[in-house]
Amino acid sequence: MIIPDRSEYLKALAQSGQKIMGVLPALYPREILWAFDIHAAEIWDPPGELLHANAHLQTTICPIVKKSLEFILKEPDIINAGYLFPHTCDSLQNLGTQVKDLIGVSLPVYTFYNPKGSFNNTTTKYYQDILKNFQSTLEASYGPLDPEKLLAACVLSHNIDSHLLAIQLARMTDHLSLNNLEYFKLMRAQEYLLPTDYLSLLEQVDILDQPSETPRARLMVSGILPPTSEILEFLDELGVSIVADDLLAVSRRIPKFPMDVPVSPLDYLTDRFFILPSCSTRGGDLDERLHHLSKLMNASQAQGMLFNMVKFCEPELFDHRLLVKTLREKSIPVLTLETELESHISGQDKTRIEAFTELLFEMVSP
Amino acid sequence: MVDLYFVGVDVGSLSTDVSIIDHSGKVLSEIVIPTGVNGSEAAEEAFDSALKLADLSREGITAITATGYGRASVTFATGKTTEISCHGVGAHQLFPRTGTVIDIGGQDSKVIQIDSRGRMLDFTMNDKCAAGTGRFLEVMANRLELDLDELSSPANIEGESAPISSTCTVFAESEVISLLAKNTPREEIVHGLQRSIVNRIWSMVTSIGIEGEVTLTGGVAHNRGLVTLLEEKLGLTLNIPENPQTVGALGGAHIARRAYQRSLEPATN
Image (cartoon, rainbow over all chains, first blue to last red):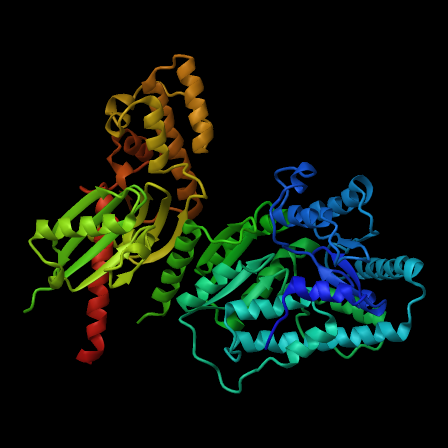
């Protein structure tokens, strides 16, 4: 299974004439974009130094926002259809305003304000209204939306979700022969691959009939993004497998359970949004989130939880303290790492991770 | 019975420490030398010195655990374990009723909870800065033109305390410069610095909680002024090892001993 390089893939796509929209994290109706033949290239943690973004943002803004702005300011060739800013947090929402009204990029800027709070009549109606508004906004630039294409996009999305759910389950039960790094590369490839290419990739994933070798220790990870490649490789070296996750970039974007094949796009998109796992960025209920985490930990037999916290990430940090307290009360070992999206792992973090795995190994040793 | 000897080598940012024990856990020799710029060379030198002190040769050593931030550079080790686990085991060996270990090392500080067998239950480490570490004191000693012993003088304990509000070493140093410019007595500044470290450690302790007796390890445990302030803040008496710098190495030696014993278990079944 070969996963194309993000930058090269997108460059080739742009050169082929594909419409590409740069999409900021995290939740947006990708199916509507697909129906307009617009490819969503997500911007989570673009590499590179911060040179210009700091001139526009306060020091206490999270590195995801800063790195995104740095990327946008470079006006990359691969983005040709504009930028979409979902309301994931106040910083991203404000960045949308800043980019549109103050900085003035040459491409169109769109916003999408997801509802905060749980499923109810008001949030449902609101969500359906903003879906329709988003569609109308795009129709103003790209012409009327073909309903058949939207339904086809929803079916494609449903297929992708079905594969991802199966892969997640296989991961939890050791039926996947991918190490930590390979697993998260695969899960994150949906951020930039065309949905049809991504589906082909998922179809190639080998789900084993029998469980593979049991790892030395089993870990669950929570936060916005998975740990860096260097940390994932280090965990692989130590024999620790991340068997489940509660990451916004990964499992919080996959429905909690399988859905029926779409018939009505509007109903499908609404249902899909509201059965996503509880998330700090949607103002989700904390008890519901704890219940979900506990279910995942049990199903995957994870022995400990790693919180990979992006510095200054307000929504996550609000929940983090109580989550840690609750897990500790249940005698579940917890490790929190703080990241500014550095590419390398510090000596201190290496020691933290190694000590945490020693603790987990002691739990399984005779 | 063949004599068995076990070694712990702790390559820290400031000092490299070696402890050699026999099969019963009896300490045969302990060495502390500055790490300098080459952790690998420091480990070799400290190991040789400890062997000489114990009248042993390298060939006679059964197993060696490397620990500390430079653990990967100890090429002659048979295993490696983090200093967090090693300090837990070492403190347990010295004070078996220890439930909490506070280790104030040169580069970082840790609070470690251990069970009745010395196994780590939980831990916390300071952030990515030198606040609340031995390095913090070293920088301040330089700025105040004092040596580290003078920085721990008990005469500093009772006096007035200059306010040092920053937890960042660089900012705290700026505060010290300002205080010196205002002719604030050095004793008051020293007291303020000690209080600053204690407050930093206190916040780590509260995040993890205190269980059982508390043992203080690391070179900063030599600082009597700081120990008194920490005891006052925690409201308890700390266990202070005779050689607080070698507790990690001692723990490493015991971990090597345990690993050796475990390796024999299948053969005895």
